[in-house]
Length: 332
Image 1 (cartoon, rainbow, N blue to C red):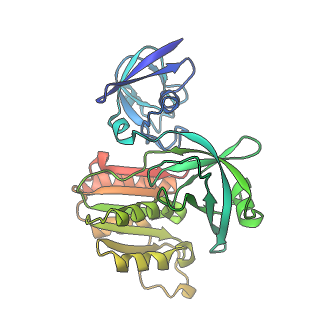
Image 2: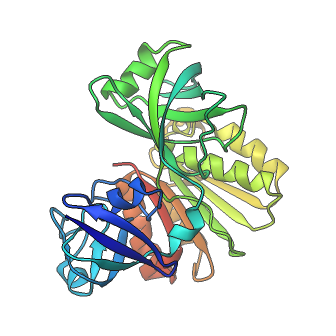
Image 3: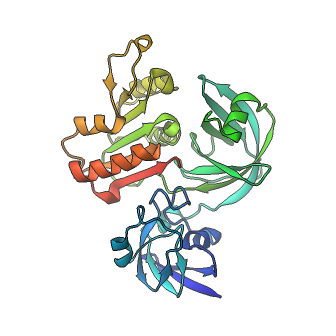
């Protein structure tokens, strides 16, 4: 059995089969509903069901409350259709031309730039264009079928390469990358996924990153530079110690060349060896200290879920940020 899903306001229609989530059905037909983790934990895919009934399956009440369910909201990465549906998903039209595909990529270089971060550059097949929006991510498919997700730190078309920033967390793939991966190794990829991308507005922006959450932020910065951007951008990058800001000098140099960018690095566990005189504490709290209001801003946040969730809540509740102008990719 299958059901039709009418996407508003675009009027596009896709079908979901029994057992498919709304997000799976949309992606299978080349429609990018808003999403990030695809595991029901980040809340990015939360959207309105305008008509019809859904099964919320294993959606967590902490991510999608009962009150939200009663109001017709659903997590599209978990909800399954029980009838024909009409949903509200305005982002679909913005992501036309981006389709998910599987491809191979060969390791061009591995730059282990700190004691736990490696910059991995991958060469894509010249005959297979891999289109994506800066800020999106792709998955590497391991031999056992498991997957790991990494955001592109590069913009499309840069010598047909992808750039990933990988922190050695002790996991199977990240440890392999940092300790054993060799140049010319062939990896299997699928993507792009995610709806973390620049919106086409005139609003000033706050970029917020923790750790390797800087990777998609770097892609957005490069995109803005290529577009001859004039929108003000204030970047806050947080780490425990200075070594965690593994491209600190790159950002300083980039900001010196682009007067629309202001950069504020923030350290939470300063050591004497850092010789640090800059901002300290939790990175999103530095934004709270610097802004009396975020009502006229867009915020793009990427990093650990605690930082992203805290920033979303505090910016909306304490600094009047419109919830629709908070865009995030949380590492889960």
